[in-house]
Picture 1 (cartoon, rainbow, N blue to C red):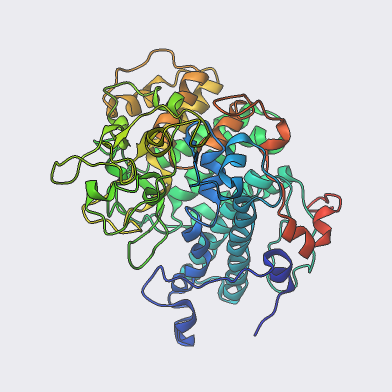
Picture 2 (picture 1 turned 180 degrees about the vertical axis):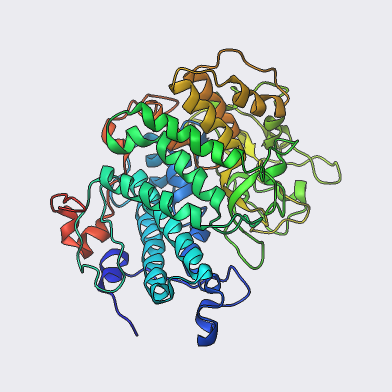
Length: 499
């Protein structure tokens, strides 16, 4: 068996699973099929994404740290050692659970991409192999984008065999330019298919658009030429003609949405065979199972911050993605809270981040906060949903183009208004960057964009409800303590990629 010490240094005790995304398991492919269809061997590169919404930590770290989603403590429920509060209040440290979990998942993806690329290199020249390697490089770049976005300066390793045992950190800006170059070189080799579950050409271009929009965050300086690039790569997706907005703003999030014309690249969750999408369990009240005839009882946790909820106009179709007011059973009957015996009524007002009996009523503790049903909860839903989670969506591409245009001094109204009109709202004139940030907050809510958007717009460190102003060092998360203990060089000076 091939051995690489780097896996031990970075991943410590993490076990890398080989999760099935296709018709054959990674370790069951006969040798004679090695070059016939190498894509069948790529499942293990995608598999870390399966944990993104749950214990992988990515969704928690990028949604709860923003100004829209909150995980309040409800008396004795949802305290969990304060791990949700520290995310909300920007007081995390290098032992916070979500921060620990992300690191290992992201590096799992890079290690498996490196292994796949090296295994396929002897067969370069075969078009199928060349495309598979290109996809693996785009996926590796995606994981490194997540690493520099969340952690800043990190080890950048593109070898499997021969990788350093204890690599040092490399500069964030250099990694940024290296992954941009790799995606730009790889994307032309990828054919565009109808699959939303694989790294297609549109996913690569959408990723480039996002990267160029964030270039100032990663490099430390603004270059107007990169706003042009961000717009051009958004156009590359738009001009494909393969994607469009759904007519209904909530249609991209229905059950079995894997092939939505709006979704570009998704995590293909399934309630039985590819589990991991359980955000509905975290937001719905204990008795909300009666509304959807669920076979599992939800956990009554996450909610929408009132200030964010109030940014939606009453006729905004996207507001239907929240549950507020009195709640009813699927048959129309009233629901009562199982402890208080009172009618179950969701109030958008949350009185405090940490609610306790004596200072707050049982009703406030158990029923406060609008709950999120943006992702459809089908009748008879289980503990896991069969709703794919979009990592890249056409609506984001349109908003990226608008933002890039505005930053160049042009008018981006057309592309913002495509989103607003679809939501049933009046179009805007003269959209400004603050207006655009607000619209991104509504359109992309619950999709783990908010932290990155707030940082790019310089708004992440401002105070909001139950959060004081935070310092700029909060714009990246600390490298986990366990990773530093496994690799002492993570504390060493940062070294250039090509010294």
